[in-house]
Length: 222
Ligand code: C5P
Image 1 (spheres, helix red, strand yellow):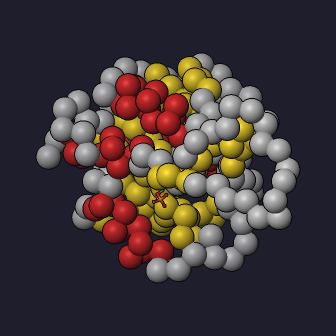
Image 2 (cartoon, helix red, strand yellow; image 1 turned 180 degrees about the vertical axis):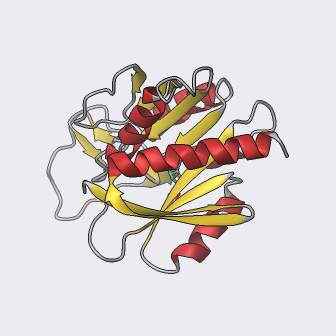
């Protein structure tokens, strides 16, 4: 039945933003709501898959039967994600990971003083790229790409550069995807692509799960 056809399939999903501390009371983050990742987690769990959801700070309830692990920073997310990736069949990177973190987090609250101040930032690890490049126990790896122009070309570049099995491209040029209820996706893999037209994130997640499972099995039988 549909409620159990994915029993035995182990899925790990990253979702939401990361939070990069500046000092004990301040941080750098972004507007990711986590909705798409949580919708994908729910859609997989509804079909009996074993789902681990690694979530940054979001305001969403945990979908039924999903094992949720909360993290704050990109480095925390990286550590849990890499540990989990090698134990799962499919890794899906939905999180909006901060590209940079503060080089030296202040131990005490930074006091207001000069008119200008500078923060030095350093690059965070690219989680999905590190998973894609695993040489042992590498899961089927899926990434997302939010682009405002040349959607197809940038998505294809990311597919190759991060060594992904599939990439899901969002066109964010007109209007918002972040926090929205609706979304559309264009999927790319090595030798193909497919358009998933605009619909609710829940519906889109169900269609995406079908496609990921299909490509995962196609790769298994290559
Ligand atoms: O390169 P860009 O940030 O556009 O790539 C987006 C994809 O990479 C998403 O799947 C996102 O979850 C993942 N990513 C990541 N770790 C990062 C940056 C992005 O896993 N540090």
